[in-house]
Length: 158
Image (tube, rainbow, N blue to C red; front, side, top):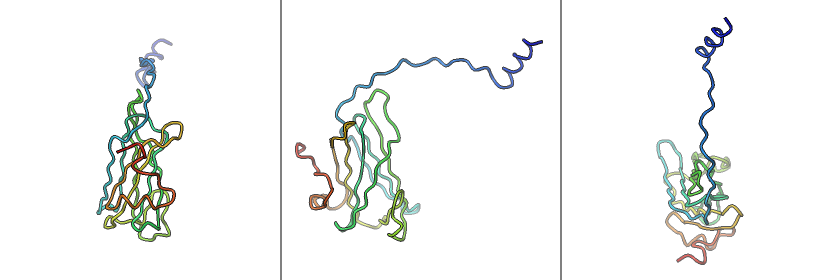
């Protein structure tokens, strides 16, 4: 009777079998470099999307946004995917456009899709050292005069 009850329990709730485990992978980390970056604004959804792919795991990804060199918004880009072997990582930032600049904050921006926004995005390695950056928008040279903006391109880049 007990064997029948156990068998019936397996049918009703399922018997858990250990899943075959994958062997651990030792990541081969290199200095992360920005492989691709994309910035898009969806007019209908009133939403900006900034995506970034790196060539190795990165310790941090951050962006600065401006249209006038005075008012600058800063956003961290959350990691949304990574390669188990350390060969890449994907970051994505989604910002809702809000009408009142005083409500700007996490997940919100006062920049509309019609604004000529300039963005700088930078990554750090796992030790917190700046390793790469990119500028997007109409005036990439503006970042040289903005306090707190990383030098981009980095001094050893072309």
